[in-house]
Length: 610
Image 1 (cartoon, rainbow, N blue to C red):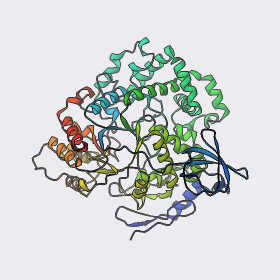
Image 2: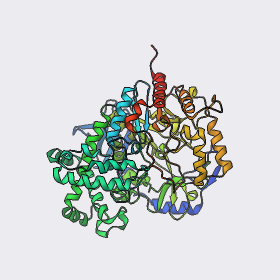
Image 3: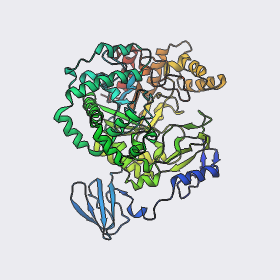
Image 4: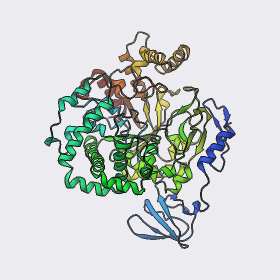
């Protein structure tokens, strides 16, 4: 019988269940610390917090007027009419109170047909014209290849921006913001105004010669050339109009980026007068450094243009990280809603006996509500924008997050609950508006009710060959099915033993633990003789995947070209995670024999019967 943990008034669970369904009590000292961090909401919060509802729902207010997004005014009395418009409205009750009314369809948009696609670590997919890193020009090439092969989507790593400093953050899952993109992904030669500047392209292309992706050197080169283009061209009226349309959100990002270049990537260490977006010192800074602020806004305009050209009708599923850097732009903008002295992580499990600390500060649930859910809405909308798909990393975080006090280990944390129903309905509203499908990464320990709630809201589950004990034919239809992820062994790496050898080198486990883990994964590749090649193992894995009835089938480019090294090995610090380029240039991918075989297998699987 499943046990339901007791949750206190602060949303803290008193205990937690591990993957073996064993219950663990949370230390009272941890609960005390987290209660202090969370604080108590104001007495009138329930009278002003947003109401999230669906057409036809009963409301917790009597007669009131609703000022709709389009400016129209409607009167509601105890419930929402079935034809009430979806969107973000303002409800004004007869006693003068005003609160946000969010009306959601309750279910995400989904395509009618089954489709397959490529999962791509874009930074790794370099082409002849790349400057050391896969860019939006390379994404355009991959999209064209995918379309020619009959694919329906491309799934990419997070493209979110990091601090624009000489020491570039490598992990796509620790961005400075979840609302703006990383200018490292710009194809410099295609930026407006580039034709009027000496780009020194040979020096840029020479960055491809490195065995690893050197983000520091790439950013230094790209920034210098992009700055020259900006001062020579400036974007003209088109950029000026776009910048005005983006309003305060873009200005806040560009201001943070400009200050960061001078004072560092952590706003906590800035001069006191710059530590708040609304501080008088910020206005003076912008006045004195307007050109640099404009440069960072211009980079986002160039990114939007190139991203639109790269996707051009193809569903591109963008990845939403679970959090953002504590010193970054989003943390600076929303600092009043963040928990101070706490990071998000994961409790101990079979893969990590010490638990994990992911280094991102969590949003305090009641403060998120008090902010009208704006930090969440903006992050979902921006990551979904212009592409037709969203993958939510660690979707269980919409229900609860493992909070780790900064003065303790990851094992000393506790789960804190979030208003999951509201957050899921907001995802559904943004999905319906953008006509974007949504996948929830529900791997690892998933508590009862999570997958049921996802299914109710039309959020696709995520199923992996490496993890599932059931035959692929038994996997759910409402899911994205794949073989592996960026954190797990590639097929070639597993089959040849190269991945275990690297794990042993990195000290991620004992020989016995590593071999046991490899053996358990190999059980998911039945039917291969001992002497089979890595290419045969890749083919077999994808033939198994093709049997899944899931709505989306996904293959990684790493597997399709026989890569033995995975993009990221959790728990390692000396390994060049997120910095391994594909061995095959983008231009050669369409003719790669193994890639063509994988594409054909998955295309046949989703093709309707004649």
